[in-house]
Image 1 (cartoon, rainbow, N blue to C red):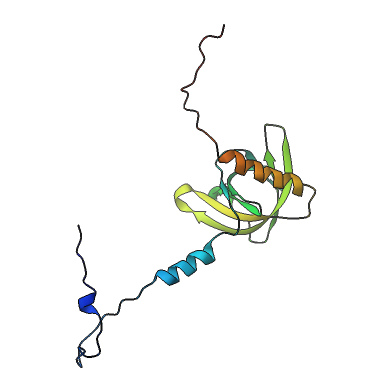
Image 2 (tube, one colour):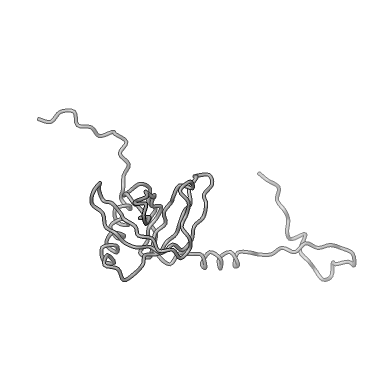
Amino acid sequence: MGKVLEFNTRLRSENSLEKNTKVAEVYDITEARQEILSRDRREVKRTILTEFVGAFVILPEKGLMKVALYDISENGLAFELDMLEGSFQQGEEVAMRVYLNHTTYFPFTIRVSNGRVIEEEGVVRHGANFVKGTMNDVALHHFVKFIETVSASLKTDSGDVVVSHIS
């Protein structure tokens, strides 16, 4: 095991203090930690995504640029863009498409709320809110609910179930 510090022998006592004695005080940070955690707790549930659906942002005069959806919630999403591609600015509105197959997609607009470089992955992760009041609000709501529901029971195919002969 490790060394155990005896705090009881180090507690400050008014009677035992001498003039030049240094005393170390011990602070309980549990309450402060709980306050920080509750303040940082997200308002909505988010679902982590990795290559679940195809997502693209539309760059004016350049076309579609593939992004990787990182997570999604009822209020917005996070996506990653290769560092070499650049990044979006906070407050910037971006048109986005989510593809369900190679040709079928639904469009919506996001407003970038933050971006941070993830050096070890070579990406810039952007957080964005859905711009409300667009024609696809209802579809977007149902899409998020679909992703949340499906992702709760996803399985990974390891190739272990193969049919070799059907009569």
